[in-house]
Image 1 (cartoon, helix red, strand yellow):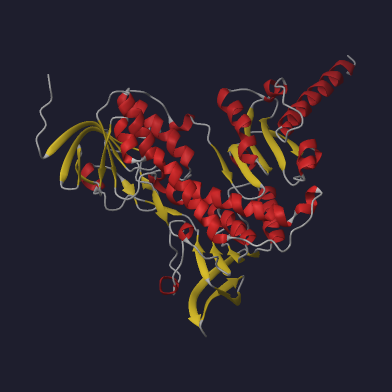
Image 2: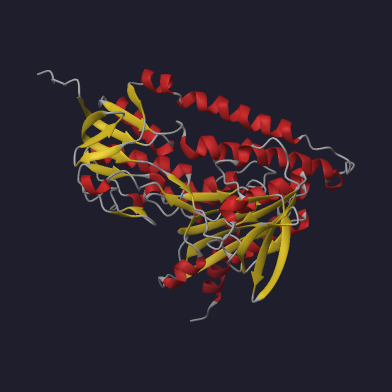
Length: 478
């Protein structure tokens, strides 16, 4: 029997709130299953990742690294080009050109061709099974909240009056700031502090914590800190900013470190102290969806909210806010919402990477987490200066660490610090996800020479340890 739809309301199998990575993948996947699907986006399709995050930042980082390599040619047997001139407007123009090219893949006409109905405007829940947008009410069987997040702005006196940039505005610059103050030592702050320094800005980075990337292993964060310092970034750890202000025609900030105060001058501030989920203003109360402003939408392991019709994915409900997590969680939602699946988010093996130089990538458990839960571990570490390809490349700073459950070859976690750590972590992520132990990785033939050969070296060390134990066992007299 055909469904009757009035002019003022429409019936959908699946309605998606948010046109970022999570929302677009979910909408396309649902439509591919034959579900009548609507996607609602208030701002730009593509969300943070494509518009103001992953894509523009990595494009700018590539330009910055190219200039750094030109200046440091002697590392590779070439000449250092100390007088290299940075064409910042050209670099930023390429950022926008690359972004626009990739955004074409998720433009509204492309989604319509995939049977996704796109609605522009702000989505507001009208009840447990309906959402309003642009004066129209969309009724749904299932819905997904994928509204993403926005930059968190610290309550620093004078910040609003002085002005600042976030990831939502920094990539629209056409002129290089001479002096840049970066607030925050997380992935965004560290990546862009290094990039802008390599492009020629004088950069000061301020971090409240005693180390960068506080979730990462301490030796990994220390390598990053040393790399930033070599690049000429002025670093202030354990430091807060009590106020920013204008004085004598200059913008200034007070820095407070262990009770000692100093003042620095700057031409622009980049705020990168974290993100806040976009959950306010959706009228989630009317939908019966529990949430809070800091942590976002409350979900269970199947990504269901307190309304059984409504699910959530991505930055709107997760602590770790990465585009690939958005994608993976949105696929879980589609299977659970439309195919009656029982897929759990806790079953995902999720790696992440900070794209500094060197990069820092991680998957699975950290050592401290294993100790907190009482899991005995054994760690195999290979330093990059022992890896032939890293020596050839002049990229000897870093390591590969693989944590095993003691007495087994089961991989619990791994950290890679290397120029291309984001690529190298994939093999270890696959191993954990597929239940392959380090013994299995030892049988994998790696091309020689590659930096990923460090994984094979760790596996070989594990096998060598087994042989030593076996010989010791045989030699023990009765």
